[in-house]
Amino acid sequence: MKKVLKNVSFVVLLLKMCIFFGQQSSTQKRIVIDVGHGGKDSGAVGINKIQEKDVVLDIANAILELNNGLDNPLDIYLTRYSDTLFSLLDRTKLAKALKADLFVSLHCNHSDNANARGVEVFVANKESVNQHDSTWLAFQLQDMLNKTLGFESRGVKFANFQVLRDTIDYCNSILVEMGFLSNLDEESYFTNDINLKALAHTILNFLKVASL
Image 1: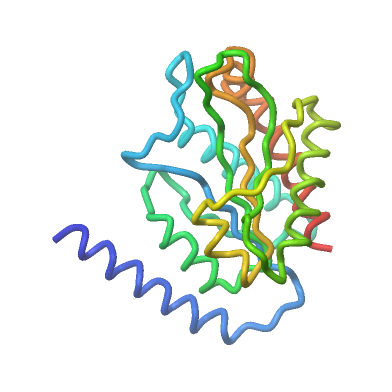
Image 2: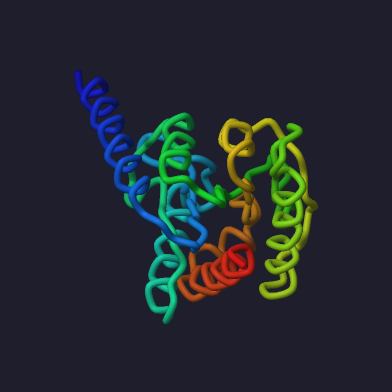
């Protein structure tokens, strides 16, 4: 019964958003940040047990805080604002209901190889009118994380991730793996609030470029 009520509530929310945003006119690009995992889905778990779902939520909230301090804040929405689990389908439905121009999914990586490190940015491996621009944006984000914060670049890659596959046809869409929680150095980086704010600041600067 709880699951039914949750799904009904989400559909009602989507309908309200469609009506509201359909009445709005704005030249500003709308950005949806997909905050990976949440709730019972912890995502990757680090060596010292920090959880991906918490790291990406902290970064997303830091992005919002920095954005709210701008003279001309960007039009940013999150797929979740707390430790809540939404299905992959619901995340993409939300982006579509909001008429997003850009969808950025935030994640942290994990590997059985404890030495694996660096940033990977993914684009849907599907031909689309938005694939070229999404690929360009993926390279831009990877370059900024490398040059600004010193993250090793592991390349822009193409994958059949559902959140990318289901959004690429109607907006630019990328997924970023912001380092490995299975790597002791990178996991330690994510435990420092100053580092998280620096990462959020870099991503926000990327979003400014992407919104031009």
